[in-house]
Length: 570
View 1 (tube, rainbow, N blue to C red):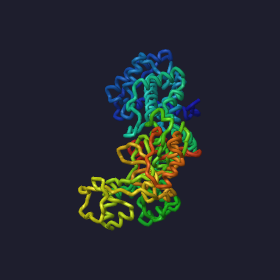
View 2: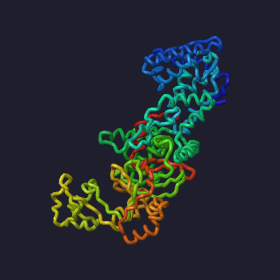
View 3: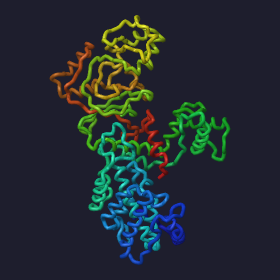
View 4: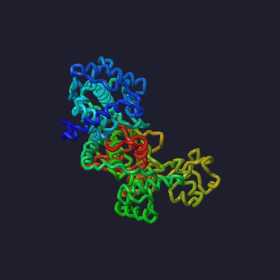
């Protein structure tokens, strides 16, 4: 049986002795204030359900008047909904009957225990309290006769079930600007229908599994998560905040010392190591982890120390599984998927990958935005109009420094507000600035153009697009967050061929090839628009294992610190 504990006579006596003192404390706040029903002894099993029903009503009334808290450490997240459910059922217990837990309760507790297989944290669902209640009810006759214990267990099981419904359906992350779901708040019917389904079919797993995202990426993460958990060693290492303000340097040094002790690079008996000892420990860590050996702390080292532990990896897995819950229930049949941290583009056709391409995305200072749109057309030998952000941050300072030779080198022409090309030598560049710049800079089409040979357009407020590049050698780099924000596509030929695959009468492959050979500018349109998703996933299931990508924009770190920093070790 699940959670069965084999105990000898001495252990059982110890447990009973402990219960004498512990059970009353369960129902008291940390200040000794009674939460509701402290104890309710029942003489026979036949009377238990009636007592539990009365206690359920009393406890729910108490929590309603006490900000949903059963005591100082336990709250009911869904107290209002539970009040409605129990009240509509004459306050009958859901998970037990006549001093017996129903199989459905055991199944739910087992699901909570294994919820890490779903990227969830058992501690979020009252696991420790419920496991304790289950144990003492089985092991101790005195506890089994106490209706208050059955009542509290019933309330926590229902609260845990509703919390699981929400976290499996919506996740724990707040909806962002690209979320395609409209159900920011789940209706009561979702919770009630799922509970009814579980009760009628006597199946917790089937009812809860039906709420999960239906996406190949989510399925792969979940499938390979089991193997990860089978070998994971969870240990809660000290988190290092880096970079740090000068005023926090002492706090960072203390945290770093503690972290090196936890990893065995410093003697735990040494309270405050001297500078030389600390430097040796840092060098040892850098050497063992194949980092640049300097004896000094730097960003990549801190990133590895924070993210290398299995516990932090699990948090990143949980974050990424939740991101899939922000997608629509049904994805389009055909769509383009760009995963920024993976530096990869995929064209998905009927859940199969039709083509894949390396991409170059925005640098951390010039991020590629997350967005959803549709590819409407593409252009051969496009002309690049330089965005103002690039003009003022990079190009205008370079022109003032190097003169018009910079414009010649970059193949740029100057166009005024009447779309006339101006001679750059007639312009006083020193007088121009962000508030006084009545021109546009455009890059002449050709092989030297930063957009390369082809540009793919889709409507968005950020003025970004997919395109080829004149720096194709950059696709060989491992870290490819290098652009000003647009996405450079290595396999642009294959992407264009896919978009017009059903329109060979108008756009025969030889036609495109001829345009490119002659370096002609043409706009290709009229094909069925293809949805495009620019997204941020740093963990994926690939080739039988979980692959972790760099958190290039610090999105995982921000979410971890806000929502998962205080999750206890499971």
